[in-house]
Length: 298
Ligand SMILES: CCCCCCCC/C=C\CCCCCCCC(=O)SCCNC(=O)CCNC(=O)[C@H](O)C(C)(C)COP(=O)(O)OP(=O)(O)OC[C@H]1O[C@@H](n2cnc3c(N)ncnc32)[C@H](O)[C@@H]1OP(=O)(O)O
Ligand SMILES: CCCCCCCC/C=C\CCCCCCCC(=O)OC[C@@H](O)COP(=O)(O)O
Image (cartoon, rainbow, N blue to C red; front, side, top):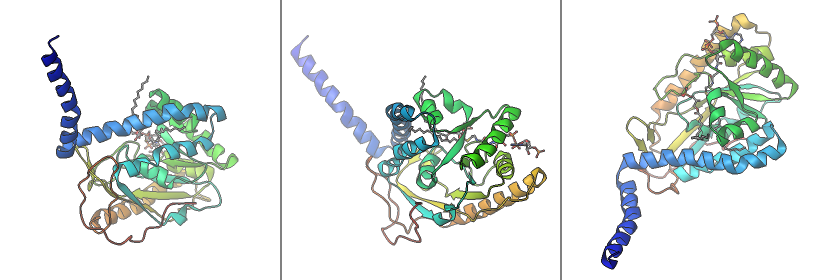
């Protein structure tokens, strides 16, 4: 080959990463794409690396610690500051059911920030088929339900209720049943509330503030920002029966909707941002006080 042509080609190859870098810095949609892809790659990579370790222990809720450790660094990479309010409300003597709003996969970051010891999420069955990610989830004791087969899902919930008491296991449920980027929460599915009533354990609602300051799939925007997680007072279910479930569901949803509305109004202009390790993020506002942050559990 002509040496001159080769030289030109080499220069071209060197320019490619530079062009990508420039595009990343100046095109929010490209940055969004890269950040979402990196999020998924991170999960696949960590699941692949850590599931053999988890497999040594066998399927156990103890592996949730590994899952937490794998996902906790994400907030630093993305420059998302997590403020947890009233985390002491999660310190209960026995098991309980956590219900939380579900906006996007990003909720995993908030989940690992507050999820207590011996607590597993309920997830859709489809996650099981995501290769090593499914394997990692299964090894961590995550409970899978088939949302299209109500009878089977109800049976899984009944088995989970007895496991909760026998094994001192708490459960994390997204009662909206699907991701919901909208401004208000979807109507709640009743499974989580049947679960709590069957196991006769309290319900602890958790509300994650809206992401629209820093994350919007519609606008292809993903910058750094602050996310507030608020733990609400527990709701007892002792003595309640299945006939009380609809009212229970509604009252918990009401409390969460009110908290969400309140959190949507207070914007995050006055909180300082963390500098993302993954490059620039549109920081809004100036660095100031910590607010009423109560750093997470334990
Ligand atoms: C080792 C280290 C590795 C590191 C690597 C890291 C990897 C990490 C990666 C990843 C981490 C994973 C993170 C997990 C996150 C996943 C998130 C999701 O997947 S969210 C989707 C799934 N969640 C749900 O769907 C909610 C639960 N769903 C329910 O509870 C529903 O209620 C369900 C499925 C049970 C039924 O749904 P229906 O669509 O039929 O609707 P309904 O309105 O709730 O129920 C209809 C009737 O059935 C009764 N019913 C419901 N549940 C009942 C029950 N348990 N017992 C009796 N009746 C029940 C109800 O009372 C209702 O009847 P009446 O209208 O009241 O007469
Ligand atoms: C044979 C190997 C194939 C391997 C392919 C691996 C590709 C995996 C890519 C990314 C893994 C990321 C998993 C993130 C888990 C996010 C949990 C989540 O938020 O699930 C959504 C679910 O709550 C509601 O689902 P829908 O809104 O109803 O939908």
